[in-house]
Length: 238
Image: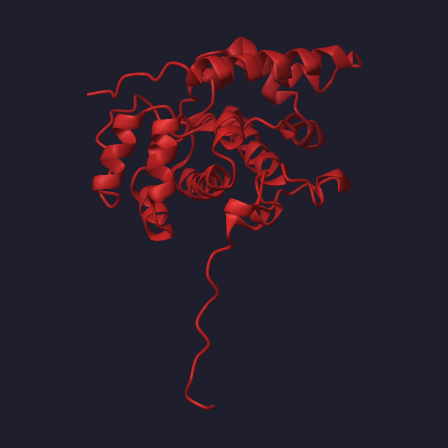
């Protein structure tokens, strides 16, 4: 019939999926480097893409002489400057997310739930990423987290570093809430483990090594660290 509009489809039922949905790759911006075929159809492709964008932003930060670089970038200057686009893509291929958005801070997320449209009051000494890039990356990260914890609370929480109390909050949010939080509170987005440059150096150096044990050692160490962190939630900053 003329004059009638077909309503948009409902969001996919992520509760039936046991891994981060591969179709979420569309929520992330495309890299300038063609992704390897191994990424196609991988349930971890969305995590890889977000990781790659994070690494690319860190490389851009170390090359930008007009703005002071975050401490993590300063500590990794030599390693980041030596990263080719192919190396960045390879470094991104981890089943653990390399960015964090207060995913263990239940107090911060409860505040975001009460007022998603309000800018964060948490003081940040220095922005980790440029504002526009951080906003887009925050949105992709939040959508990935929202789908993942609805699909598998335990596995999604471990890979993304989301504690159970924070997962409860994020799962209750609407897509509109996610957009507002990404727009107003994107400065909370940080590189994961930014206070551990040694761990990041281990990651970056492992992709240029013929010793495959270096990559396995990083994966094991990062997984152990992620599991340990989820057992202790930090206090909400005042």
